[in-house]
Structures are given as structure tokens and as C-alpha cells.
Length: 276
Ligand SMILES: C[S@@+](CC[C@H](N)C(=O)[O-])C[C@H]1O[C@@H](n2cnc3c(N)ncnc32)[C@H](O)[C@@H]1O
Image (cartoon, rainbow, N blue to C red; front, top):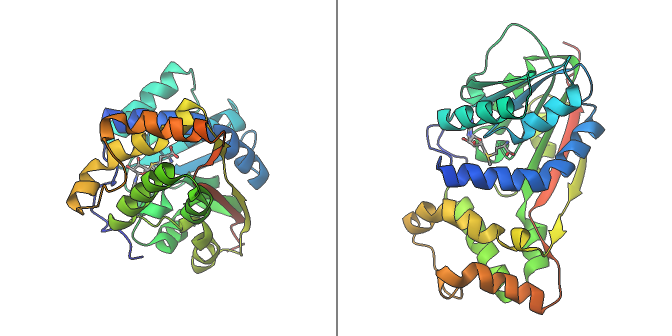
């Protein structure tokens, strides 16, 4: 998969609906990300850099972990997301988190962080090892590097027995891939870390499962943001039926099978910056 053009916008856009979707998605993923960051070593009093912070989901999880004596700096190139993230942090009463508008490949600074983290960001950048290498210069020797990125392979495989769910998930997958995102960035992290001159990372894979209405709404929710990409790449809608009723029919298919469905695999990789 070739990378994205560095100047190309985030394929899911910058609409308020996409920001709301990221918040819903973040609420579901927060326990997974919190557990992962703890396992990687993120904890009290640390200074943490969060790359591709979106509307602040990972930064707020990290802000809870580092506590009032720590600090989290989120980096995000979309100004509207930065504004929403700042508002959310203020509303939640966090004084230990800041958001900076910047491309993740251009972050500069004098002070060294204890950790650099990110979720669903390296999948969207053109040169992930270069981004990671540059970010590591902002982390002290021995500091933590911890990223969670997706793997759609288990998601697609474990969805195949439910035709409508499988079809909807495949369309999301195709739209992401056609727009240049790397939907297998998770497993690629093993090489990406080493190409960024980091030790081979410790890795985990978790696949959330569920069947409540919020969970089964995920493909429709995501397709709404991806719609311009579906149209731009002229992707087939065959097998999906009336889009107006797709959300309800997806939920009914899963309820009718008395099944749980998977979500994208969350691959976590963490390592430490070597002595310089
Ligand atoms: C899928 S969202 C993830 C947001 C957040 N990390 C989360 O897990 O909720 C990806 C975010 O990365 C941002 N992004 C993509 N490429 C970027 C770049 N080169 N520099 C800075 N931000 C970028 C997008 O604007 C978007 O907000």
C-alpha cells in the first residue's frame, strides 16, 4: 500500500459529525488504550506527546494517567479538531493537557518528553518511520514509544459469516485503502519501529467484540464520514440495499444471529528510545 500524499486531507474529513464519531469511538476504545498505555509504562508525573490527537481522545486518557503533576501535549494538524479538543479538555477540567496545531512530521521543541504515543495516526502518514524517527528526537533516552494502529484482517475474517455486516465492513475497508490509508498499519509497526532505529517493539492484538446498537452502528457512522471517498473512487454499493435503513438492518442481522461481531483489531506496539 502506498502512503498518503503529505498534503492530502484526512480521508474521513473535518466535519462536526466526524468529530462526534471520533468521540463515540474513543469512549469505546478508552479502556483498551488506557490498559495499553499503562502496560507500555505511561504513568504519574510524565510528560507525554500524543501524535495525531484528533479531538483529544488519547490525550485525555493519557492526562488521567500522568495526573496533575504530569503534562500531555497533543499534536494535530486540523485546526477545527484542535479547537474541539481544547474545549473538551477545559470542560472536563484538565489543566495538564495542551493541543498544538502542527503536522506530526514537523513537531519541534526544546524539552524532552518521557513518552510519545498515538492511535490511528501512522496509518494516515506518508512515511511512518520518518515521523517516528523525528518524534523520538523529542523523547529522552529510555523514554516510551507506544502506538495503537489497526489490523482489518481479523475484522474482515471474523465478519464473513454475517453477509450484510461483512459487506458494510468491506466497503469501509475499501474506501480507506483507496484513499491511501494503511489498514494493516498495526502489524507493520514491528518493522516501522525498527526502521525508526528503535528496538523491536513488544506487541499485543485485541479485537473488541459487541452487539449493542452503538457497536453495530460503527460501519454506517464511518461510511458517513467516508462518503466523499466512496463516491470519488466509484466504489460499488452492491449488496447493501437501501442506505437509509442500513443501520437498522445491520443491527437486525446481528441480533437475529444472536451473535457478537468484531471490530477492527487494535495492534499495540511499544518500545523504548535507546541511549544516544
Ligand atoms: C483517526 S483520527 C485519530 C484521532 C485520535 N488519535 C483518536 O484515536 O481518537 C486521525 C487524526 O490524525 C490527524 N492527522 C492525520 N494526518 C496528520 C498529520 N500528518 N499531522 C497531524 N495530524 C494528522 C487527522 O486530522 C485526525 O484528526
